[in-house]
Length: 357
Image (cartoon, rainbow, N blue to C red):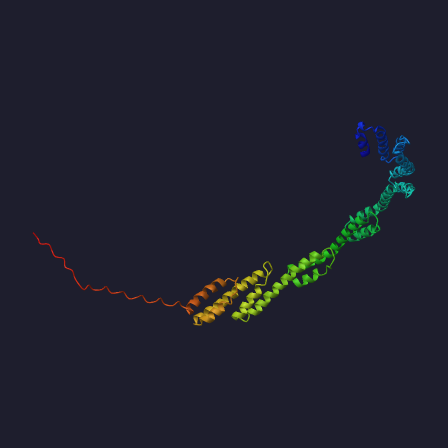
């Protein structure tokens, strides 16, 4: 097409009419050859033969004609192969492949023939393997473990390298996860029942039955983490009560620190908060006792043990400030300076009275 456009664009004033005519003939021949059919090649040869022996294009035209003549037979094979393949069934496709293989490797149409052969070979494999997938899908539709396993076995008949192998493997993975879910779901249900009654250690053991790599393993791990969180919270609360039993300010402060490790939202979080607040007031009461007995320094030290975040903390800070002022009262203000006496005048000026008339 480009050659034809260029040839038509050459002005007649250049005196190249014969050469332009030959270029147009050659371009038209090329356009016909690109149709890829026997008739197209035959028309191309007829058009190219119109170029006279004296033309500068004659040798190129002859070599091109020879190539097109060799192609005609092979294009006929391709046309025949395509016609056979149009039937779509396996015998037709195999016949089409056999026809396309008649094209020799040194022929310009060889690559085209190979592409067609590869496509038809894939079509044959798909046609052969599709029934396996269809049967597998039918089996899997029942949904029970036995049917799903039979579906997997059926889909595994599609060998690696076959066009439908990837699709089959996706189905197999899906069905395998369904089997694993049905097998492992009872473990998680048992774990939930145990956890709802506070048996978190037994719940962890039940959820751990779901092995790594299984469909529900991720869900099981989330549950185990939640159960372990409850176990740790209960352990911290128990340690808090054990520490608080000593009844000393240090022991109570240590007990409160254990409760502060318990996350909100756990089953014992409310109980731990109540206990921490109660113990904080007990520490404050001990501090007040020391202050009432005159030991203010010790009262301050005890009150400082009350951790922040407890109900008694703010009151304790207020008391500490008050007691510190008692220990360190502000210095008395300096005495006011004595008033300066008014000086008595040394001379008295008398104003003479005016005589009365």
